[in-house]
Length: 277
Image (cartoon, rainbow, N blue to C red; front, side):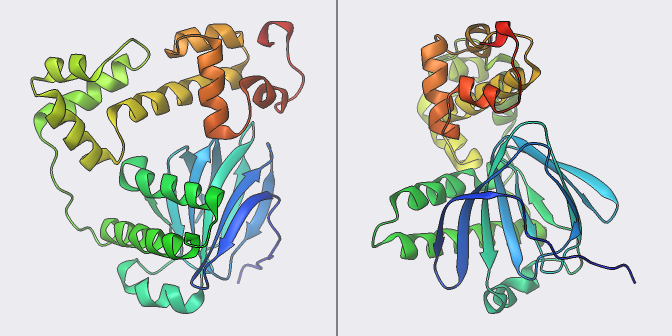
């Protein structure tokens, strides 16, 4: 039998809240962190807020990008491989008795349940906001949000058929993927796929969990973050090529999402070239 070493994770806890059923943490992983094979005694839900990270589960390498949410059953043996650059995540630890109430929704075995941002984004964003506020109602709010998150993950894991997306909605996704760095209004997008702007806005939020504008900003931010890591362009050029109005606009949006300016983020990657300043 393969020996298992339990180790403490190399991470910085930014903020956390304990509801009794769940412990919810916003954490930062430093770049290039490598953790040997280990397991956690409690089931965990992890959602990548910024950056990316890799892990090996059952011999298979998995890469989790920003927006990905993963449920790991208790005792799941895995190895974390840090990506270049810092990553941020929301980590939810489920009390043993709490997870047992939902265990029938999830497959047995060590393989995690993984979903994209279209399933969980709205709930994850609300959880982060509750951690930031942390007032008298936060514990109740967090419990409700985590229960909803478990229900969505459970439906994916049990293969509950998702509501089919109409053809025009598929065209909307394709157009966004191809044109998100260009000026693109809701009205323009609706006209291109042949539906009313109000219907597009309503159906997009229902299927994806956020507004069209929020999705465009998310796509632009992912492109810009990769460009910051590559160091091939100045921050001003990255802002323009990503679709932001200017460097100031990009810096505000980047700090709002990551807690740091693009300059601070790039500095955390190591020595910078003159062009990247």
